[in-house]
Image (spheres, one colour):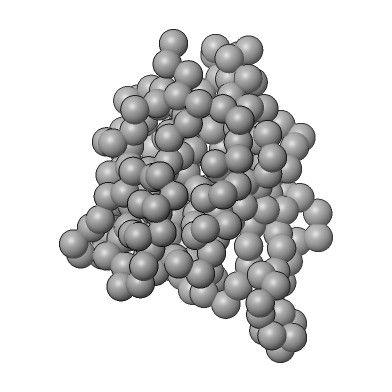
Length: 222
């Protein structure tokens, strides 16, 4: 078995938080590769990722997070996949814990930990007040909290690029419809940074629309 873990990081103009996120991955004591998909950035995202030893794929046009994930999958050499946002921070030893759990459970296709919200420290007091954090760790199919067998994508197909913000929800529905198990672990896998330009915050209305349409489509199939 190829024990390489491929970390896929879609990022556009991520120079503000990228180094911190990459350092947290580099410190993980496990066989890994980091694939950064630079989605047509105009800052020095490409240079930072390259200097830190990542495989960097530069898009000539902006393609969006979902398509960037699929691009990363094409370049991934590992049998295990994790998607990670450039502004979140994976916790110490997370990859080892998730990976060992998959090894112990060959019938499980993905292992998921929890996330812990934190407010980015550089924000002003006024900006911090506007952000709503969850005080306790929580589950959710977010980047940085789930390790997936690459072969799962051979069954579910690639990430759906036809929806703007609900691609992970769509993937979970496909996992369930194919009876592919996702196991939850009671660990905090990553810290999710909250700031004023989070993708999830700026695209929340689109995410709700995608979620509703996916649920309707899934109900029609059942």
